[in-house]
Length: 240
Image (cartoon, rainbow, N blue to C red):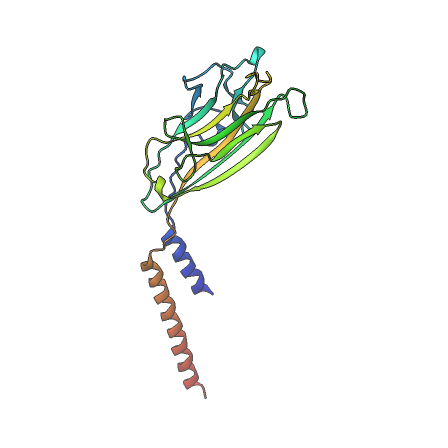
């Protein structure tokens, strides 16, 4: 039993590597800060003071991405508010990445209200062209456009394959967009928000085990087993 434990420990030690985090200020729930994050309204750079806000208090803060608010909380956005962070994807050549994030949404009106027109959100990787990409670096989304219809909580995790390693020029983007009636091109004049709480993007080392230390422990195990067998035989010969 002890030998099995030693060999198992050797495998764990041989396969463990430091995992680099690629997100700055991913623990928004505790930092209560926009540090490390960039904001954009309609592709024109940072918007008004109400388009992106910090709400709550530690350990329950979030970055709020707001659209379609009027009055005292008026938002400047017409097309899209985007919260994003440029990514540093340096890692070992045979690694992958694990991306996870948690957020909630809410809206002033819901589908139970007359005149409701849903605002919506979309999440993906951006390359600076205005298009979004999925976890395979193909055109698409991590999270496809989704209506904001009252309160909802979301948690997502994605494994990014090895093709992402050491790529440059990519950003993780959280977009919130006002909804419009197709005929009138008018919204419902009721606000919606996405509240981002946590984001992590960590290197996942290749699980291939270095054979040298494992073989050494295996040889040690065989040696101990042989010693016990020989010792038992010697004791048997010496017994009357």
